[in-house]
Length: 121
Image (cartoon, rainbow, N blue to C red):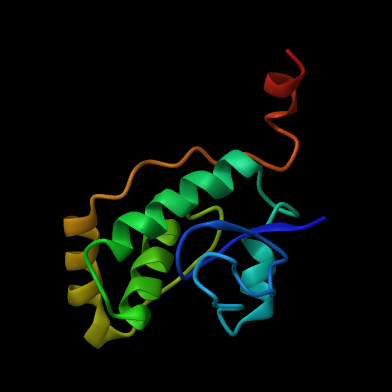
């Protein structure tokens, strides 16, 4: 079973490239990226926290491309071990402003079974 982060709305969805039940969007258009933000790589808790980041960004911007870039910049700057992302030069100021306004929460990154002990106790 694959649970994944919907990069459009921030909800957790079944299937990384399947349609999100909450917003109707299926994929970011990048299959590798969609699979990257799934329970193949990260715990359910991490995916939920990343979803809160997406939601905070969505609350301050209605431009899907800018929101996506802001999320990618957030991840690459706060968790460079996850991925590297450099926005286009003309987008940097705008997406940094989105992140300032959104004030996204911190995320604790855990691998798929890292939080297993919490569930057992």
